[in-house]
Length: 157
Image (cartoon, rainbow, N blue to C red; front, side, top):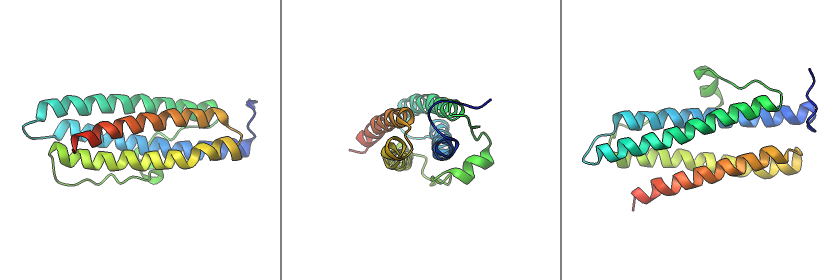
């Protein structure tokens, strides 16, 4: 059945492609945050173990929402590790430092990359593709990443 939501097929395809890249980035970040939760070591282990858990829970909700947004504009969301690795802007590689500071630096860098990607797409979605809904939606995601980045950055002071 043809979707009639004010986006033509070309517009919806461009939006879905960019959202699929975002979904891949979020999934890689989720996995890296899980890794930090499982493998952090040091005197602050328990506090950081719980902190990383709160962050991956928040990212998990973002992942589901992005996939559902892709579906709502008539496309299928990527859902395999292979697809995520092909689409992501992030590296799944990580350093060998299992301290909270080591993980925080890595995760902060990834959050900032996602923020930049989102910032690049907000006006494109609204102005070039006539998709104010997705533009607004990813603005909210950007704000969540800005807050998570602030929290991570505060650990480094």
